[in-house]
Length: 481
Image (tube, rainbow, N blue to C red; front, side):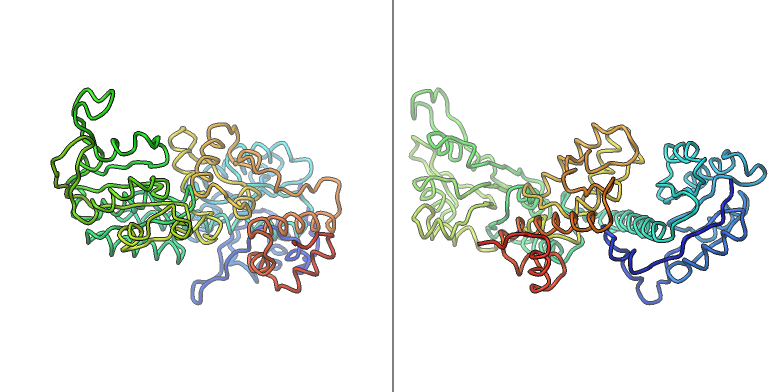
């Protein structure tokens, strides 16, 4: 069952063919990532330690007792585990028992099974029991190094998510999450504006969290015990929006059988959130402007002025300045609403946050569905980072929720997320062909995301503009007009 043959490492080839994001370099003083190797063959342990010690702090163990002792002392993020261990190396049960104990100690540990070709059945049993992956003997060091980088990257994401959950537990911004600089700037704006009654205009694409931002402002304000009244201005027919906002008196129009308060009155003492403000008809814009100036309204069909004490937050995904130039949106209303502007970045511009948000949704929906322990595969994380997310956070949330509900395995694949088109097939193709397919897909994705702008696409891909042109020529990708 044992095989000590190992293929030599080739760091350059490993780096060039790596599709997944690399593990971030350790911070000064932080030390190398910790890796535990469990194998009863002295020669294999020595060879692996020699091959991997440059990148990792290595712990070695040869049986169950030493494995558990080393694991508790080191708390490694990743473990390489041989299934054939004493007292019966020809039987995988001891290795499977160790796997179970390691995962009971720390469910987030990534355990990679190292097995001979004849041991694939037990290796698959180990995957079903919670192991992250397996590699066969003789071990190809390039393959192993690539797999370890993926394991440590995923472990880093999960531990970062757990750290953020602890930090944000008392400061969740009503569900908003983000560790990147752009979202931290949004959070700071929320903190500052929440202490005032100034009108706020929230700008952002559909699905970026405009209503959640408005709710966060309300919850952090002195009005938090008052009502939060939200109205989607684009969802109400033009003939009804005036009555919906301002209310009406009995007999004001056909069907007005009783007096009815509008949304503005209902928000008194709290916050009024006007979503898609750019869709409000011009005559209603005039009445909204007067309300913002005077803090009073008249119901449809009424003559009495009614004082209303409410804070107004508006939001839109439309270009209001373009609306002002074309005459569809009043300039004076814009400046009344936009005392403070908060711009929410699209998800595609939040590289620091995408994986963490996906992990957040995965944990939440897995717990709700009774499927705790679900993880993303390395390919799933890759396509999550590469996808353009035209529907922003809402699209990511829906895809993860559907994947959790529909999946049967322990790890979600790109297919579960319905993003399988970004996975480069490797069966029956050479390394050169697979690399070119991946390059072609990633370049196409970057160009689509940036509307054909070469410079912006090159920045997203992490290459220079001339390099991108060279790659496009090599791959036969037409230059945008």
